[in-house]
Amino acid sequence: MLAVTLCRVPPTEHAPFLAAARDALTSLAQRPGFHRGHLGRALDDETQWVLSTEWGAVGDYRRGLSAYDVKVALAPLMVFMVNAPSAYEVVAAVETGPGGS
Image (cartoon, rainbow, N blue to C red; front, side):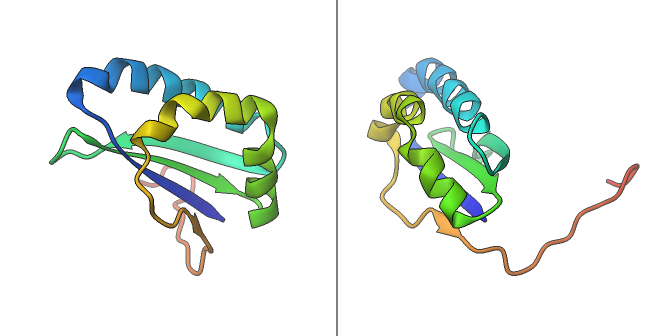
């Protein structure tokens, strides 16, 4: 299951946002069912960021978000979050093997 959270961050807030997002990823990574997470910034618009995580199941994701330490870690990011759907079912996937690009 994919969780994609879009954020709009003014340039003056990039440094604190980045620090808070790293803390949030670290907290999320401690939760059961977490597979991986990424923070990205749009190449064409420096105010657009995305926090994406992969989970074993939607229940893992929802339980992960309900953990107290995760709520505390995500709180500083909430002011930047765009109100949009965030949980997605994986319907197709392709992965490269070792040595792939």
